[in-house]
Amino acid sequence: MPANLRNATHPHVVFVYGSLLKGLVNHPKLDGARFVGTAVMPLAELYDLGHFPGLLPAGSGAGSVRGELYRVDDRTLERLDRLEGHPGFYMRKQFVVRAPFGADRTDQMEFLAWVYVLPRDFVAGRPLVKSGDWRAYVAERAGV
Image (cartoon, rainbow, N blue to C red; front, side):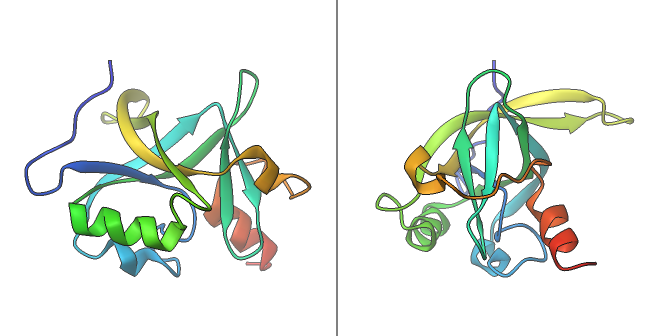
């Protein structure tokens, strides 16, 4: 059963995987959010849409997408909805994500989090980010 990270001041849990990651261009949109930790969304695929990625929930045999978990308040969630074009472009849906914990970070805890996903037709013909890691993919693409 997924853990509940909600609290009165930051009631929403959000999984980010692209330009909202720490150090990337849209991370300031998470100003005031509380960082929970790194996480992985299983059974998902990440696609390169140019300057940002798109996540597509997938069936068995799919990979996973790496990202970060944040607790956010209502105002921040509304700001993220505007950035992501919800509900016209990205759709905000809840999924179970897994976060490593423990001294060696090999144990995992499941969390129910909001995730911005795209319909399959929005990613048709786009390159698959096989690693599921946008930050590493962008660095590799830039030759860093």
